[in-house]
Length: 256
Image: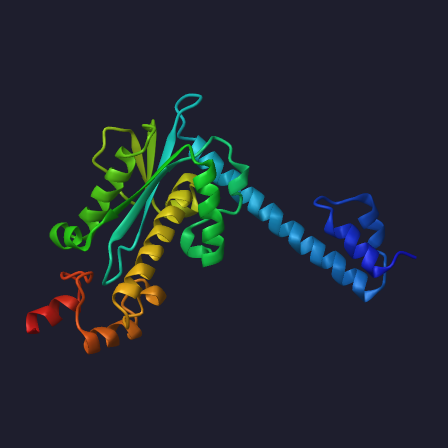
């Protein structure tokens, strides 16, 4: 009789259902049942990722007006924080990019996974660009307009001019056909790729700000208005990277 260890080793190298697995279902040993259940769980997970990946590709490809058309996705990170820039990115991917299977909205992925996908996006993207919009620009323009202008800059600085632009919940002042996609980072592979670039670039910047302005916890909360951050502002005051038109910063500066 085949040992449980041998069965586990055999299952570990299979990615599709095999006839011998049907016979394995009759095996009454608990270890075999658990091994087969674990394999099925992993198989279902891979299937789900593949289906989601194909759906994202199909979504993007639906905007290709001709063979070889370039589709750019753009997204932002950091509209809500009290400190730091808003960062946007634009990405053009190949029509078929199996290496990015599992790529999703950056907020849905762990920091480790974001770093893995960052390397893959940088390797396989046909073109990409990341733009930082400063706190000064945010205070001058307002966060919505600052983000729009940053996305525009990301698109216009791509090494390849796209034939169509997919923007996450935003309409841009560009001379390229576009569509504003609500929750685009969950529907479009190119927007999801852009969200990874924007999020990782901003997180890295805020980690650098944590060293420049110790005590605020920027590496932990990335500038968002957490309890830790608000307490630090009360104790240490407002820094040059805080957004002066955002509350409670605006009221603190008025008192001050």
